[in-house]
Length: 350
Image 1: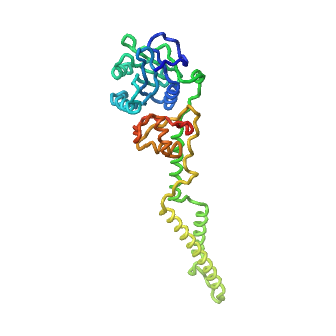
Image 2: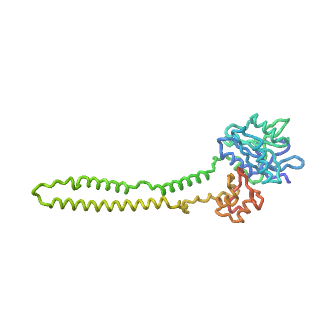
Image 3: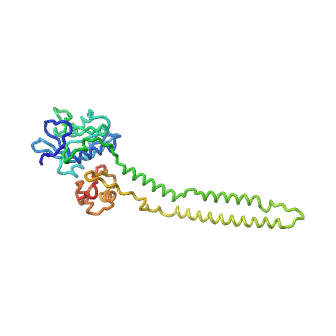
């Protein structure tokens, strides 16, 4: 392991050891992860390697930890689960410490966080990285004199220029899940409309015509006809003719209503149509090379389904490339619910 020579200094040069080097891609990933949800605190493990002489440490990867808001937030079970994922995903890396987000509350550590660090990370060289995504501030904490103390600065390595580090940017929240949910609701609405057709203007016209015919039958019914004595039978013939015409119109309307009822029954009994290609979710917009998207593993997810979602294909070559990008071991590519996967652009898969 060689100490990086191309790096960017964040904060002041501490002059103490070990010198902390944070990989640039991981720095950006933690920042985006912190911006993903600023309504609550997030946490995870930091993984990497330490020099044999202990003079510097490379922070290279991270694994998300779930925080239970009901059972005391930072439970031993949470860290055990995250450690199991870390050992499976990165068997060659050490657990260097953990990271924690403070959305809008600054970088000051609470007594609970200090107790958690003391209980879960007992080695003196293990550290804590705190990020405030709202105030755009961050700092490493290391043990000094038996207590966690903020480091004056640290180094970011792995990129030639670091303009993005010092420039303020507008937080961009991932909205893919919102788009998917909107599409699901649209499909559900279409299905409900097929099962229960909406009221059309023609239906109103049909009802009005039916009522008019019923009213005409009541008014011109034979019992209401008055025939004057001595009159001719032409009046009766005219009434009968009108009644025949109205009867024919009523029959036509009944046939029309019966045909509409048959169509409604066919729509209700027919299976739900499959979504058309127009209703299918559009593929995610291509990401800029070097800025991989992320996917949080949910129950039932497999690497094939994730590849199908983001690349539109579950070709074995794509699966192997995606697994290689995330350090997954074949042939099963085991996934754990809650872990974050990097989703590189398709042309960046190797």
